[in-house]
Image 1 (cartoon, rainbow, N blue to C red):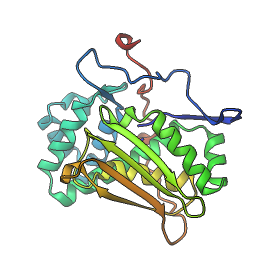
Image 2: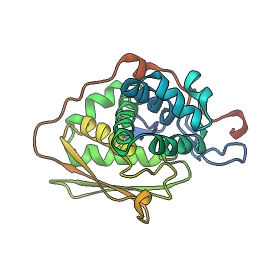
Image 3: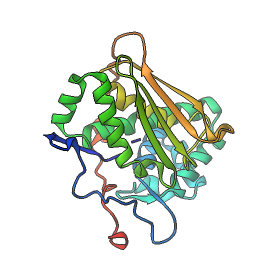
Image 4: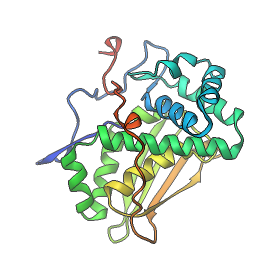
Length: 253
């Protein structure tokens, strides 16, 4: 999803998930210069920075990352993973640990909302929360896995769901190019998606983090006590900004 563009359709013999026709089945390269990743990693981080600390701070962070033009003219297509990689690194270096964590969590929340509003059709948004949690969780993990390169870039993603009565979801990215201490951007995206589409109040744990010396980045998602949290959705500007992250560039076709 984190920027996954899995599309859902009505049930068929192949299940309730269907890959969109305009999504390439193989991660596209970036003219030989490296892996690519979805633009929301930049777009929503810029919006979160501006919302929490003001436009001047956001511009300064983007400028220090060498991508000032991305703040004034947000990307509308897949981009090299090195750009959000630099942005996340500069963000963590410029702000305090607490402030950087706030920005990354808010950016992840906004990214999750964007995906819900723009990448998952209404029939699926209606259907999945009404299925047993163990089934909706498995379908969502399958969808995320099919398009993981849009948020994991060159990293290697894997996901599984264990158990049926109280399912436990385990997601992993090896060599995560966007790892930050605690990986709060990824965690917020996962929490937003799984809480909404499984209609279950969830907790997201991050037992292993490559930015903190782990051999991979791992998230464990499980049901948490309490009712489903109906988190406030960000404004339309965050949800409705157009992008073409799911379309390969001419060079990759």
